[in-house]
Image (tube, rainbow, N blue to C red; front, side, top):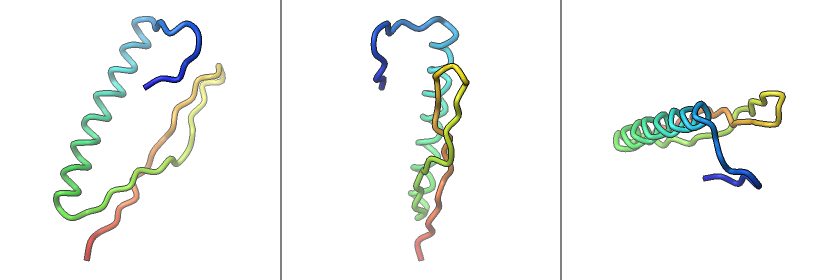
Length: 69
């Protein structure tokens, strides 16, 4: 998902970085499914935002865990 305006081409290193994020998110989603299957509610919340001083940024997440009684 992207909301970039203008030139949407990425260089090879940027595409690799996006693939790494996508792969990590896939593993995270699998882990969330596993936890939910065991009766745990998992909420992901933004803890902070990382900025690279050049206009790019990314959200840093933390899990909020709720155990079912």
